[in-house]
Amino acid sequence: MAAFLSAHASRLVLWSGYAALLVCLPLLFTQGSALSLLSQIGALMIFALSYNMLLGQGGMLSFGHAVYSGLGAFMAAHAMNQARAAGWDLPLPLVPLLAGFAGLGVGVVFGWLCTRKSGTAFAMISLGLVELVSACSLMLPQFFGGEGGISTNRVGAPWLGWSFGPQIEVYYLIAAWLFICTVAMYAFTHTPLGRIINAVRDNPERVAFLGYDPSHVRWLVLILSAFFAGISGGLGAINFEIVSAENVGALRSGAVLLATFIGGVAFFWGPMLGAVCGVLLAVVLPEYSKAWILYQGLFFIAIVLYAPGGLASLLLLAWRLSVRGLWRRLGWPLLGQFVSLLLLMCGLILAIEMLYQKNLDVTGVTQMRWFGVEFDSAAAAPWLLALGLGGAGLLGMRLLAAPFAARWAQIVPALKEDGHAH
Image 1 (cartoon, rainbow, N blue to C red):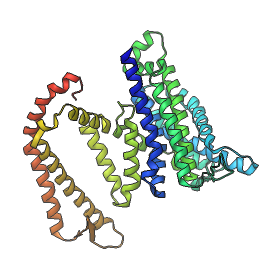
Image 2: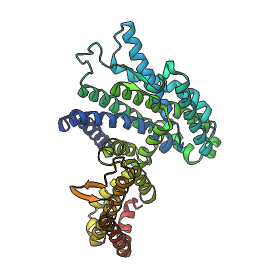
Image 3: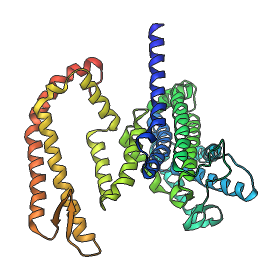
Image 4: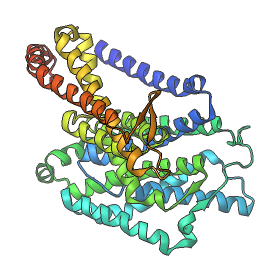
């Protein structure tokens, strides 16, 4: 009984801290651009969590999840426009709910079609569906608005004194929906349906033997996932006040897949980390480099190869090493590996930036500034510097690999005592 109450109290503290963090973030990031960034992160968090209901909990690799989010966004934009044209006072906080039901409706139809199969067939059908909807976006300009999309205006009659014109009010609207959706999706993982979808992912034959229809279970979960994806789409429509064909395209489906996998599909909160990383890579990084897509791809490959559990698994491992005081036992080999990796990254990034400057800059200027230092991509010295940094990094990692492996082997038994060695 005491253990139950302790666990319940810990969970209550965590959720209270999460709510407090959402409330206090605008106090730390007061600029409008920062609030816009936080709003995008919030909407993407809901989207990524809904996607992980399929991938992480159900083992369904979907390439078409943007369909549910995008169509929800279009429905939200049309609802706001129609309400304004008719002179109705549509409560803006309820628009995401309307978008969620739109996503749910699409999920009922598309889910029935694609969940009849699993594995690769499911993935291919989802890819076909997103291409189908993407093609329809140009064939049905009355609904999708053609290439220009559908514009809307979120500012209407005040609701409880809020007009939702200022970005801070939009942020709190998204934060409120993020908290509600996070609680709901976490609660789902503890429901019988949430448990049985894990069993369907791991062993569908045994689930069928117990009397459950795996296809039916996958269908129900996809419908719920589409509902939350629709909510995220509605919040995106409110935030940007425009919805276009890009919202229902394969590119957006790929983006949520990358974000979810980078964060960690095996952890409930992993997709939330991935959403933060995804927005930073897609919104902030382009401000500093033209090669941001290349970096995004390299980062994803590095996560798949060296941290398949995602950022969440790395953070969890770091926390357990700290709790058990095992960092010191890794000692200088870990520090050396970190410095070597830093040198390798510096050399690689310098070479990529100079390559972009030399071959892709339309002005023909070969000079560039990197961390306050000017480099000439047409000269040999900067390339030799990049080669030297990268070579030193590779050599250091190679030489320190054996000592690091030996130190790591020493602490593995300690980690296994907790059952958390990877």
